[in-house]
Structures are given as C-alpha cells and as structure tokens.
Amino acid sequence: MAAHADLIEFYRSYGESSFEVDEPAYAEVCHHLGDYPGLVELIAAHDPDAQQPNLLFAAVHYLILGGAEHPLADVYAGRSNAAPAPLFADFVQSHRNEVNELLRTQRTQTNEVGRSAVLALMLQDAQRRTGLPLAWIDLGASGGLNLNVDQFRIEYRHDGQVTSTGPGDATVSLECNVRSGQPPLDDKHADIAWRVGVDRAPIDVTDDQRARWLKACLWPSKQERHERIDAAIEVARSHRPVLIEADAVAGVEAAIGHAPTDVALVMTTTWVWYYLPPETRAGVVSVLRQSERPVLWYSLEGRGVVEPLGESAGRDVIDSMIGVVVYDGAASTDAEVLGMAHPHGAWLDWY
Ligand SMILES: C[S@@+](CC[C@H](N)C(=O)[O-])C[C@H]1O[C@@H](n2cnc3c(N)ncnc32)[C@H](O)[C@@H]1O
Image (cartoon, helix red, strand yellow):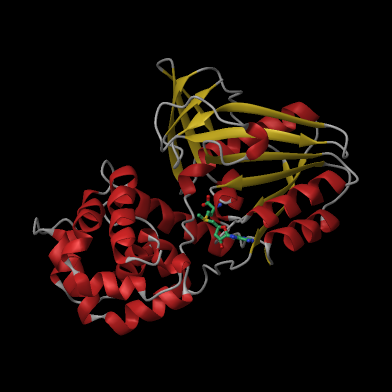
C-alpha cells in the first residue's frame, strides 16, 4: 500500500464495510483518516501486513486496556460522546513509540468465542456422519479458547424454541439465533476424544499481557464479548488447550501424525483460511489429501474464501460460510456448503 491516497481510501472503504454497523467509533476513525497526515505517515511507514486497520485499533485498545490515561479511554468505555477521530489521532501521536512497537511485533489474533456456537454444530455433524468420537485439529486456534467448546453452554433459538447444549453450570454461555433451516441440534456436545490447536503464534492465556492482547483485538464497545472472553480465558486457565506452535502446513501434518487412529479425524478453520497465502493453502490441502485416513475439514470463513466450496448467496458481505470438505484419499473429495452464519456466531442459516 504505497501511496498515502490508497491507504486513506483503503481505510475508508474498510471502515464502511466492517465497522459502520457494529463499531461506529472505528468507522469514524477510518472515515476521517485523511484529516490526520501524521497518523497516515505512521501507518504508511509499516509493512503492508501491519497497515491493517484492525491491527492499529488493537494496538491502541491494548494500551488503553493497560491503563493509558487519555480522553479516548472514556469514549471507548462509553463515558463520553466526544468525536473519536481527533482523540484517536491524538492518542497515537502521544503514544507513537508504543504504537509503532506493537505494529512491528504483533498481528491481530481475534479469538472469538461466539464461533463456538458454530463449531459445536460442526463437531456434532462430524460425529453424526462418521458414528465415531473425534480427533479434532483446530488450525489457527489463536489462544485456543474455542478448543474448550464442550465446556460452554450454548442456546440455539429456533422456531420459538430453545435447544441447549453443554453443561448447565457453564461459566461461558452463548446464544445463537437459528434464522432458518434445521441444523442437527443435540443437547449433548460431540464426544471429543482428542484435540489440538495449531497456530504460528499461539497465545498463552496464562500470561496476562498475552491475554490482554486477545482482549485488545475485540472491539471496545461490545461489553458482552469482553465478559465472554474473560470467562473463556478463565476456563482455558483451568482446561489448558494444547497448542502446537507451527506454520499451518507443518503444524497440520504434525497434528495428523499425533492423532489417535480409532476415531474420526476433523480439522476446523474459523476465520483463518483468509489469512493464508495461496502456497500455504495448497500445502494444507495437500497434507489433507495425502492423509492415510479420511479427514473432514469444517470451515467458517468469508464467502468464497474456501475454494472447494465456491461462492454462495449470503445476504450480506460480512456473512460467513459454513462448509465441509471431506478428503478420502487423493481421488475423492466432497464439498458441501452447510449454511451461513454471523462471523461471531450470533445467528445462522442452515441449508
Ligand atoms: C483471526 S484469528 C482466528 C482465531 C480463531 N480461529 C477464532 O476463530 O477465534 C487467525 C489465527 O490464524 C493464525 N494464523 C495466521 N496465519 C497462520 C499460518 N500461516 N499458520 C498458522 N496459523 C496462522 C493467526 O496467528 C491467528 O491466531
């Protein structure tokens, strides 16, 4: 993103499509970026990877969560209605060293617990198809919070009814509105015999600073997401997820090598495929094809991101596609779109 004009336009259109509905303060900053040449300069001085709006917002949010005193903190906490863009530009200016350091060293790793509402259905679907307990590899697991899905209570609302899955005394509870279709709802979580996460930069949530980074990647106004992630971090501190630190191809290969053999092998990706370059995607698919046993790959990704699933008619650009691709040796591959969902699992349409 060489030219500043391109950067300003990128932020403007990203803000409109990603933040306007759910995080208006971020949308405002994106919309007015061009009014703050110093801020544009600072962003433009970084690698293209680090110029992503979500990373800049996470860096600033991280410093505010760490106690940085500034009027922007009151806007984020909902205590002030001041215009966010000038305060944001001023915050970055007055904390430029810390912001630059975070842009250099961190990447956004949003670990969204709400996606467990969709993951739970995927795992139940896998168990129903195979009739077996599961060996589960979550590629791009971040802090591994969703690997504890079976510790969570999930309420699916459909046709005026509620189906609840998971322990009644769970400290993490999720709600998912089934807008259409009939997903295979069950009051029991799938039987997960073995599970592991793979991530090139796994987050150890027992480290308070790393847990703060996970929270910083969430948007500030969404209080319920913050409460949910706090509860999920606590669960992960007592049920420590096993995370392999590796790039996707090597990590999935190693995980398949360690998986027990008398169970069905499942890989999931939720908002991960999008971040993988073409050669990494091809490498992971090749590992799945070469597996000596069938692998079911369930995904929750943006529309058209998972190539074997193709495009699909969702209602909104932000909709995510739920799909399964079954690899059973090089010769046979089945791909099926199962539905569409809110990217954080708030609702789903099951096909
Ligand atoms: C947006 S986060 C999604 C986290 C989680 N799946 C969720 O839905 O909450 C994407 C994750 O993918 C990981 N990731 C990105 N590229 C990767 C790669 N090449 N190999 C392994 N992990 C990768 C990142 O480190 C990050 O934790």
